[in-house]
Image (cartoon, rainbow, N blue to C red; front, side, top):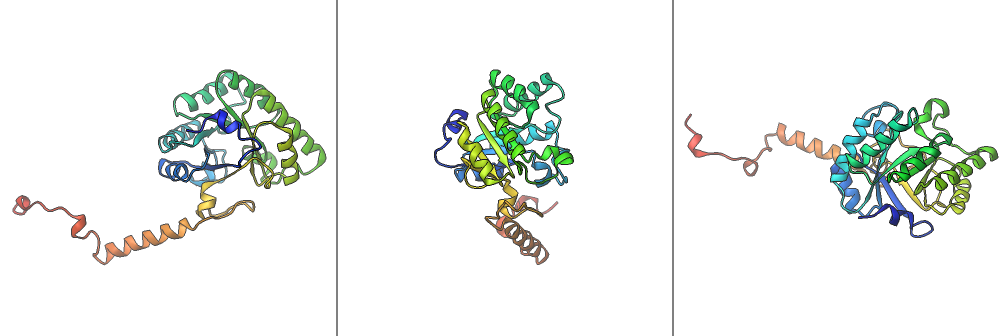
Length: 268
């Protein structure tokens, strides 16, 4: 199984691959395909729970789905997202919530949507033995403030992001997600850090990439411009469901091979 230290040591090496997953069957496929890490993202809110944002996702949601993903993986590193308001309001509560994702659900690490307010928390968690992946750039939990716009698009904002990246590395984060930022900004942050950077909409100069699994499967009603569909799972699912319905309507299913009869029960 991939460890946090092995993941961290890949900075500057072979590109790291990460996908989200929210259930055991999907996690098993991702794991068997050789992806390095599975992120149980609060993107589950948009991707599989029918919400318009990540904000309604609860600790109970993430705990349950993290446990399912852990049970579906053998080799990939499992990282769990800390959902909206599960940290930040009270340090002790944030530590307890992060600890539950590791001790109760089995995650190897947690991810925090980061800012100046998470530097101290990152250090506290790491000191307590909870590995932290930081996340800068577009942070969807701040959608009501930032929208879904590209971040770090002027010199002051880009420099501030670089400093925050360094601060989180110094605090002990083992990696950093950079979301929806200019590729040259992501490249300079990558060069400045000794921990791996993981891009999503941040160009090719990071140490790895992460995408939402429903986007690559072609299951999303809307995908961001920086995502790519790598398959037509929606089409295959539709064809399977249509074939099932037709077989039932036409009386072709269940057939004899799907049926058990007990002759002793013919004469009730």
